[in-house]
Each structure stands twice: as C-alpha cells, then as structure tokens.
Image (cartoon, rainbow, N blue to C red; front, side, top):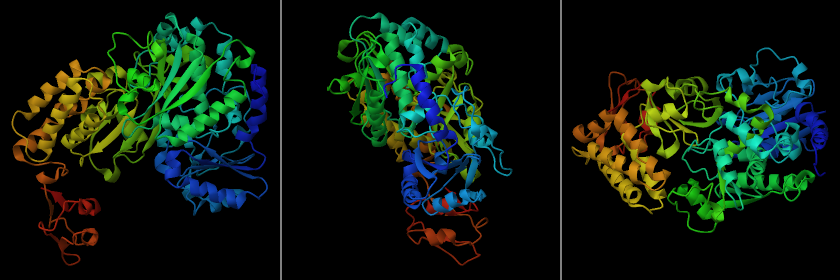
Length: 632
C-alpha cells in the first residue's frame, strides 16, 4: 500500500495496534539486538520458534535492545487481558518453561525483571490502550520503577525494545512517519524554527546546534545532501548501533524531515561495516519505506523526492570526523581537511551537506510532533533534551541509558548503574570516548551537560561512559587510549602524528618503570601543543585522557616515576602480590585457581605465595573474598 496521507497511516496504525498491545493469543518478543544475540538470544528465539510454531495462539517475534544489556537475553511475553511480563536472562534452557508458565499463569518470579505498565511510547496519546486496563500482579515491580529505568526519559530510544525493527507496520503503530506527514504541510523555515526552538544539539560529539546547521545549509545554493554519521568508533560506545538495530525507521524519518527543511533529494548513511545487523535492518527499512511510497520519487503523492543510500565504512575512527567521512563517501582516503570552508557550504561533492549522527536524527520526529518547546523543557539552559549513554566498565548494571541533560554523574553511576561490583571503591568515570576526560569521585555531583563537562576537562562526545574502580591504573588507562588514538590518526598533520606518538612513548616508559623527573611536565606541554595545532577533532581532543588524569590523579604518576610503584597493581614491572597472613583464612580458593601453582598452604591456615612462580595474572586477587591478597 502506498501511503499518501495521515488517513493511510491511521488505517495501518489501527490494524497493527492490537498486534503490539493486545494480541489475540500470546506474543513473545525476544530482544534480538547484538547484545541479546551475544548473550544467547538467537538460540532462545530459535527454540521458541521450533516449540511453538505449530501451537495455536503463540507467536514469536523480535525486538531491539531495551537498554538493560546486563540482563540479556530479555524476553517480553504479552497476551490480551494479562499483564505484560519482561523476563531476564531467559536463555535457551529457560524460554520454553517461561512461555508455558505464562500460559498457565505461573510467572516464575525469579526470572521476572518487571511488569510493563504501559509500553506505548511518548508520541501515543490518541488510541485507548487495552493493556492499561489490566490489573497488575502484586509482588512484581513495574519495569519503569526499578532503579535502572526510574530516572530515565526515553526520546531517541522510545521504540527500542518495544517493536519489531523489521516491521514498518509496527513502527507506524507507534506513530511512526506521522511527524514526516506533518512536516510535508509545513514550510521549510518553520521546520527549522521548530528544531531551533527545541535547542537540539548534535549528538555525535561536537554538540553544534542542529537548527542553526540546517538553516545555514539551506542558505547555500547547489545540490544539497543529507548525511547520517553512523560511524561509531569509540571503545565501549554502542548508542547508534542500538538505535539502528532497534528502530531504523526513526532515523529514516528524521533524515526525511531534514531533507524537507534544507531542500535535499539525496541522503547517505555512512555506517561501520562492523555493524552487520544494523546494516541488514537498515536495508530492510529502506526497502519497506520505498514500497510504502515514503522514500523515492514523488513521496506521498507530492513533488518531493528523496533517496537514501547506505555506504559502509572500513572502520577508520577518523572517518567519524565530518570532512574525512565525506571524503570516504566520495571514494577517497578518509582524511580530514581544514575547516576554513564548512561542509554546510561545500561538503560532499562540493555541495552543501548537512551531517548529523544517528541519535540526532532519531530525536527529530518527536520534536516535530510535540513541538520545540516540549523538548526544550527538558535538560539545562545550554543543553536541552535527553542524551543516550552507554554505561560500561566497573559498574553493576551495564547498558544503554537515556537521561535528561543535567542529571548528576552520581545518579547515573550509582542509581541507574547500581554502583561498583563487590562494593569496591569508585575511582573515576570517563565521558566522551577515547578522547574524553577522566572525572574523579569527588566531582560526581557534576551535572551532565556540554558546558559542565568542558569545565572539568572532559567532553560529552557521542555518549560513551566508562566507570573505573580502585583497581584501575589511571596512567595505564591514559596509555591505552593514546595507543588507540595513535593507531587511528590519519597521520596528515605533524602535531597529531608526532605529538601523540611522543606522549605514548613517555607513558609507556612510565608504565614500564622507566619514567623520570620532568615526564609529567613534558606530557602537559605536548598535550597543550597537540590541542592547539592539530588539524581535526581527533588531534585536538586526543590529549584529554592524559591531561585530566594528570590533573586529578597526579599522585599516581608520581608513584610510578619516583617510587617505581603502581598503586593499582596493573603495571606489572611495578608491583607484586603478597598474602596477608592476618586476613588469610586458608580457604584455598586462590590456590585452586592459580595457573602456576604458586600458592601453597594447609586449609584453614595462612597460605604462602612463591614470587618466583607468580606471573601476576591477578586471578588470586580477583578470587579472594577476604582481601587477603594485597598489592605491594
């Protein structure tokens, strides 16, 4: 069916609504994003299909990631007149029993993550939801009330985990493409004004005001292009991947609205080749949108035409930079250029080009439907709306979180993230990916917005957030990120190419016990030089991990250089393990797991560690429950 009006969308939405919220039988939604599949969701999904494919009234479907990656595989089971239940860690050996239990009203409490109070997204307010009438079951928390979700506000992630990403009908059921149909009736200047009022800033790392970028691009003559940056290369970051895997149509709709605003007929999605599932679902979404008449020529019966092409990147981190990305799109080597000519004036093929990332485009449809003032009501004075973060590292609840700008770091790490495993001491959190800064525990009350993070030497970046505990060596951490950035530098400009290498050499020497007086000051001098004179954002932000760790953890650098010790016990030449006889209970756990048989001793008596056999693997340190293994 070709969609030409909101009435057409209404017809599809009404037909698909019960499929989502009140199916005639039982609907099983298996979280089939990359995180779920890695945790065993594919096996669970296949077995459920096999067991229930011939059973009347049970349908097996897929969804994207609902954010709580630590709990995967996540499976939602719903039936008309019964509560929606979200199950966690539902691996292959549990899923059949869980489904049969649900059919028999035996919900297996130990497997339940929570009840779904009302899974409709923030755009749906005009269709009565049969699920809202279902009486909840006592003893099962609502998903929205558990700590991981309680402080989240989902805008960009509004559909992820709630619908089949391969179904355009389910996207429309959640009011997809209504914003685009509304935008078709608006003047381009009014679309841009709405985005400007919202205060939406680019979520790819630069944080430039989206409305101003669109407005500037629209002013320049020539063939204009809409480009989506899905080249997500930060270690530990997977926000864009999850949106593409769980809600690809929201990105297409955002690009369509942007194309209307600036007068573009061609769009490109530059996505990493390492994201095969995201690419697969994008291809399906584009084909379905074309079949529905929402992409291609004469969209919705109008004179507006827009075509989207997917281009796969080869994994170069520097191609996340706008000019390098456009160079790669043209089939050239992905190298940045100087910014004296902006891409909104001369970008791809020397035409005016608007580049935003996946999350930015995903925010656009709800802003058009609910208005710029609605979006601007969230966040802070300088940073409006919400931001998606990938919360990873030494934290109990890893996953994707979307929170209002201005929330404290402490709320994210300890309330949403659940704190540090094994109650270890929290040390720092890094924001902004490999080029971000490390923020110490004493600054955990810091509100998260662009300005506040910059004031303490860090950046928002694309949204990576890595948590560190007492066992993290900040010198080695800085060395690790600088090693990554050295490998990813295009090598075009001297400050970045040579400066990062020199800083890495100094850090490597420090970690190997060969640091010397003056190294810290030289690192600071080199860092400032690289920031000032590098050609692109990779170089100008590369020293951040080093400069912030020196600023907040200078004592660790001094211990490495002066005392030849690594306080965290990470840099092997600078520490050794010992067993404290006062706290050792003789439980023998460490001795059983030592690969070198370096630990000996009788049970219930203090053990001994043979330093000549010890390879400093850390297994004994991680195994001991009594803190009897100490670092010297």
